[in-house]
Length: 125
Image (tube, rainbow, N blue to C red; front, side):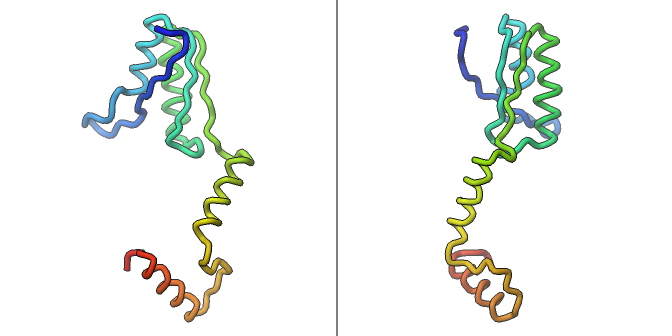
């Protein structure tokens, strides 16, 4: 195996049904048993770390890798509250809200006008 490579695995499993494979934890165990000493793990499907990810990946999968002989497990945090991410997210929101009244109007006519614009833009009725 090369010194550096990327493997894509899938964390979530629901019930007893087969899920997307390869699964993360068995892959990490296999890597450790084959002599891989260090892994860097990140979860790009999330824009912030959720408790499920922190528990399943940064705790349980870490323990499985280290127990199977791995030496170093580095969890790379999601973007979370980093300034650059929050600024980018704000930019996306502002760009997609262009033309919409975001002043918080709560009178009936303003709300009706917003509803008509949303329906005209394809929102479900």
